[in-house]
Length: 106
Image (cartoon, one colour):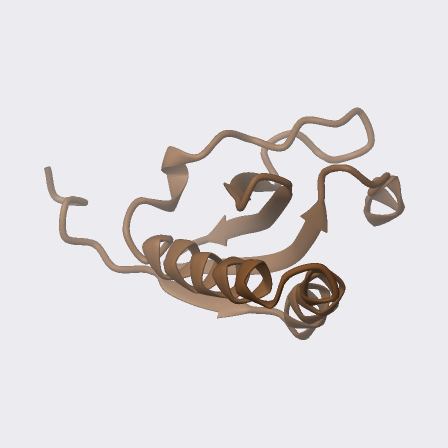
């Protein structure tokens, strides 16, 4: 098991950061505690991608090249969408599953 101790570098895009801020801001209008919980869980799950990011399932869509993005559920309604390239994990988006996110496919 040579990959057992492999560490990946996790890079969170500016767009993903802005999406998280937007979701948190909206959530805070209902519950500040829930918004802070979302941010904490995002940080925890993003950090967890340093080890074995391949454990999560692929994001399947006919308009996305097969095997490009993986997804990780955070909170009850949000997806952290990322890709793995070499030893680096790129977190590209944070989307609300209740909304249409087809725009990211184009």
